[in-house]
Length: 154
Image (spheres, rainbow, N blue to C red):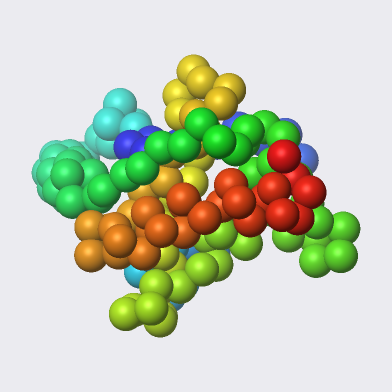
């Protein structure tokens, strides 16, 4: 994911900002898979020359991050039906459960960087992760289908 556009009702703006700040504020210490991320304004809203230089540096760092991520796709789970469905007993979505998985070699981080439906697809789910976690990530993704079938989620 290179960008995330967030829209919300005006009366919920502060609530949305507070939730996003958990991962993206300058004071946050919890990041998906240990990768520090920030909310960045659009280039058109940046007015000062100094901030435009910072923006260019941010774009370069983002490109380096994207180049360093590995990914895997699966057509075996339908994201619209499964990834964001909450389990009534835990009140967590399947995506949240997967994003909480920690790699064996790096227990302070998460295994996956992102888990999302592929752009313009209803059936393909893309998992992104650091290449050092590739083996573990691929094994987990491959085991999802048998696991889901065993638990009755076809």
